[in-house]
Amino acid sequence: MCTGKCAKFIGISLYPLCVVSVIANVILFFPGWQTEPVTKPGEQMTPEVLYLGGIIGGGILVLIPAIHIQATGREGCCNNRCGMFLSIIFAAIGVVGSLYGFVLSVVGMVKGPQCQYRPLKNLTDLVWGRPFNSELENFNEDNYLFNKDLWSTCKYPQDVVEFNIILFSIVLASTGISLILCTIQMLNGLFGCLCGTCRKDKE
Image (cartoon, rainbow, N blue to C red; front, top):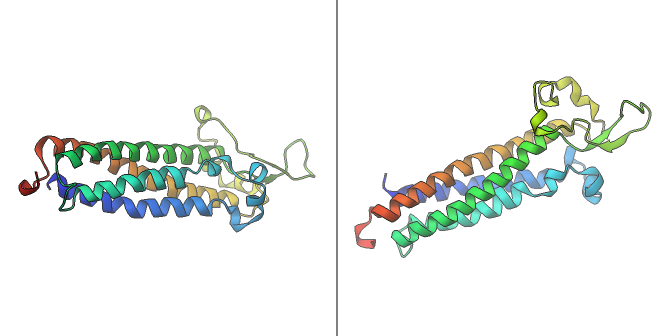
């Protein structure tokens, strides 16, 4: 496959990944399909959601490179060595954005959701917090992700643990694939810059 066609394929492939990432992040603003946490984000929302990893990282910072990368693969002024060189820079932006969304998703999953639960020292009153909060370096098989019996610790919003795991997994997958595609485009752009785009009449 020539570098121009490869760039076009990568650019088109990034569009749905951007959309999926943004939608998943937006839904995360309504944990357990509740609207109350949005009114009190500092207390009731998982911090990693507020950092907009899916919207900024997997969305905007990948969408902008996707537009240029697709244009690089089309017939026209971008389909040349200069366009390929610029696609390396844009793809690098996509790598940074994807990595940002990917890391936030990992952290959000490992540390767990913000929810109402009963702490061990107080079995009567529900408090807001992160009952599964743990550092990445302490991640092991005892983490709540591997013990479904612990999920009932969160009382409100209902099913917030499953909610967060599923949606953060979607952002994780979409940004992970975007990261791979943008990295490939950096290499593809390098080859296109050095060797051309297989369209001799456009060089």
